[in-house]
Image (cartoon, rainbow, N blue to C red; front, side, top):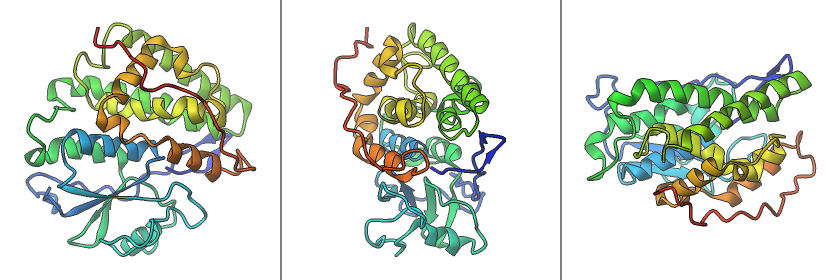
Length: 302
């Protein structure tokens, strides 16, 4: 997760630098071999959170190892808790610069390290989860869900684009805007989409019926962070997720699934956002609240 340049008061996210693809048949030169790749994540980052959810849902814990960075990021970037036992790195920046010494952008998570060639192969967060879903199928656990079914892919991709633009990235567009017009444009689009999702989920347990898909994986991390961080810290305070009956029930429904709930670390989330953005929260004080019962009955199975 990273703060990028602001153009005309509008937040612009940097493009992903490493975009190689791991493939089941190895045609890309990067075969989907168990034990070969290491995933670097932050519990605070919504893009990284997606990859943790999918890894857990598909049972890829033994196939893809994981390293979790410290939630507080400073000018040196993400720090690992001691030297990483696989790469020897203390900071994520070492892996970026070791792969491309000319790299000058921000060092982002999630990213995937290839232990065989000893280089980063991707920090392309939208592709990391779909690669797990489509290229690592031989290593999925028995009975693993099909999160990206071929018949639904056009609809999933279309909804994902809307959700990314107005919700996932929309909260950043609002939070990092430096003009009133840019802020209101982003916040307006954000809540317009949340209203549409509320209506959709009023008649459907998940975004595409009764089975969880990639679309649910992409929406959930933003909902999980919304009331605790984005509502106040990013000024997305028109409504809370808890003000939307269907969205709030849906979020709790997903949270009750271990792959979602057990990868949701509110301590990391709050400490990261409130301490890492001094231009928004100069004091670095982490709020005590909100008091929300994520374990309350959701009733979505009805």
